[in-house]
Image 1 (cartoon, one colour):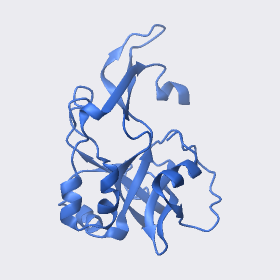
Image 2 (cartoon, helix red, strand yellow):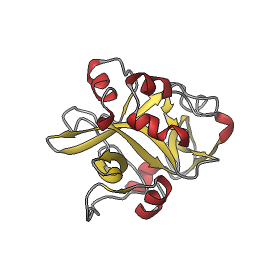
Image 3 (cartoon, one colour):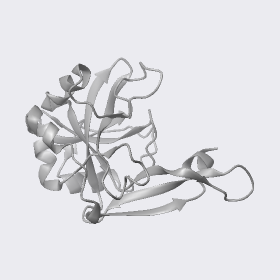
Length: 205
């Protein structure tokens, strides 16, 4: 997410969930599991910007729960049925690793980063759920079948990128609306760049 908080608020017509957000304990430009990020959700005053950890289970499982797909499962249907448990995750790009490794010299072959963006939405919204946990609020992204652009890189799934016209439907609609919106974004309206090196893992060492 390359935009500043005020950029996100302008794009989505959002306020703040809290009156004076003071949370600067995260790096919003690169979202990592259990890291903190900006999300948008409804509160009593309308759509607002909040900060949550990317793990809807709040560290209660061995691995962070960063995405969900089977919405009919009881634990996810419970969130999907409640508009107050839905959220939007604003992004400017998302990354998938290349299926194979690349020899970039100087050591063991490594995977590269493929970066996907949405041509007609420089800042786009990913469908998500959130809930409070013992360690604080956490969110997860909803995935769906991959489109023709993502499938060669990640054939199992892609994040559910929403049309701008569907933001409010996702946040306020019925369970059937949520299921209907769990669809891949039009591949012809997306672009991809990469593979890029060094990888995120290398940059974080």
